[in-house]
Length: 89
Image 1 (tube, rainbow, N blue to C red):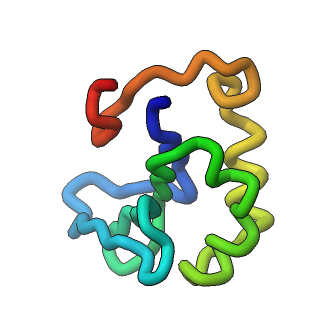
Image 2 (cartoon, rainbow, N blue to C red):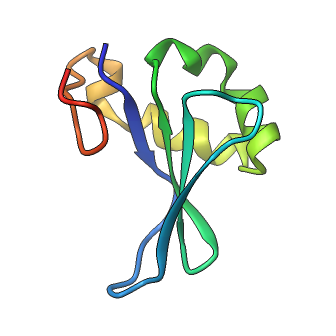
């Protein structure tokens, strides 16, 4: 099953970008731009049922994460395809 990646914020051109795994949450990666979390990747889409818990551990606003996830028609319609970092499976 392809990973889910969703945007949590805007990224400015030439931003200082990095990523980090969330401690205690294998398969969860945050994308950081200029010190602000701008994206989240869940290796297994089934992890979304624990999104509130994952957000609390990662320091991400759960309400924002749910809003962004609900706005992703690919997730809602089950059309998710492998994306950057998705491993091409």
